Image 1 (cartoon, rainbow, N blue to C red):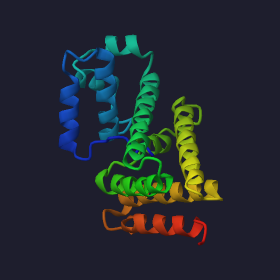
Image 2: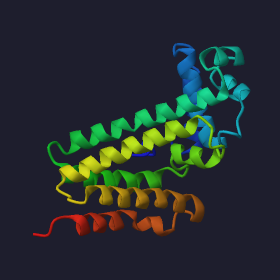
Image 3: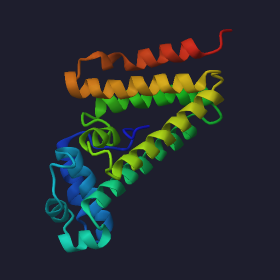
Length: 212
């Protein structure tokens, strides 16, 4: 799940706390830099924040940042990989909450997608980066595409295991609804059509499910 779907902070104050915590000297410099960069990119955009500010927030310096990451683009790519990796926890949570119950996991996915839309005004980090980084040659696009593809494959497989014959079509529809709801949340505010995301996804699942 996107990432979104990635244990994100929903409040600017929480983000500030997260950045402060990552400056703990017991945390390796590389990890501090990544944590700070993720939060600053979310607050200001990738192009809206420079390496000096990231290094300062990580209680580090630019020389150390470039020692771990050859360029800002390299840092951006690593941040997106980290965000994507956090999304794996979502799948583990679903499996733990609904063991041996693929349909229960699918409905759980819908619930988490809806919560992510309402609880996180920043939207999906991967989608935001794809929109902001307009240069087709930017290495981040490959990271984003691979992460989104992996997520789609996981969701499609879950739909298949839940007994949905047209599992790929259902997965496509659910992702379109969830991604569209995030855009609505960012563009029209909290009272837009995304309010009906859960009900719409549930109706879509019912439409694709085998009839008794």
